[in-house]
Length: 343
Ligand code: SF4
Image (tube, rainbow, N blue to C red; front, side):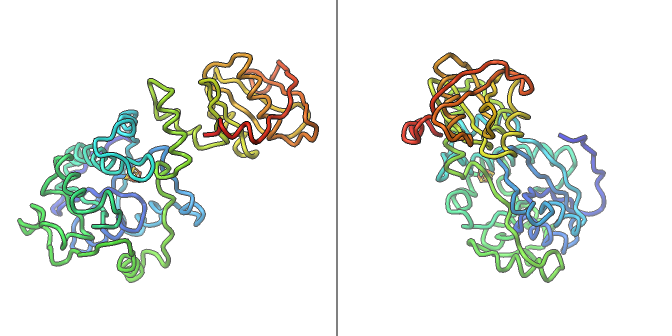
């Protein structure tokens, strides 16, 4: 976590918002700022976040939006304890490996600790009732409130009028009549408000969460199965290349130059690296153990995904990418055979 600056309470009420960089948390913050409440944002970072769409529009939504609203942002990295949630979520998964209800509880617990440290008066989110069928229905929201021990004090400005008033509203510290009653997936009202207040002209959704992606979820399940002490540091490599599980070993084959470079950069020091000799092609990484069979299989894959035209070819390998000092001759693997090992 970045160095924490203790915010000295001013005369204004201070709300800590869970800020994703998307439209909903932006508008939730706007609604509160419009009634003269001071807002501070908290964003959770993790290797599961994908911000590609925001990046395509040259700026991360977080910068784009919150510079305009003048909101201070703090960042917290989800730790290895987040992997316990993915391994065994109390409230189960969404369609893939996304434990959304447990995930919300996890970040709200951390946010509560953070709110105490900066003397925030309350916490709010950009959640919208029924926007997501599993984690944002009324029952799920109540579970989230209870488990995060924020029952009665967690404000959801966008759907507040459809929910029970929070303590802050009951005390008259937050004007309930200026909160909204939005539900469902449409972002029409949020976008209109963003345009009206000059925050943005068009809405580009953030990339979202890799745990909702089927292929990534398969890789993640495999990772958790084969690693007794999983760490967040290991997750990045799951994003790149084609992944194969063969004889309890993991083999990753780069799909292009960018991925080849990334794989070399983020692999562990004890991983084995392979390339086709004198032909352009993938960088292949072998994690965990590598016996003769595994090296053979990985070499056949490396040849298959290289530009080699002949069925046989030379593959070089070693631990140091600048000095692949061992060599093996193999035949290309057939596409039919490799299918059963792909993750
Ligand atoms: S989509 Fe991902 S980040 Fe969002 S609540 Fe679900 S698990 Fe958490």
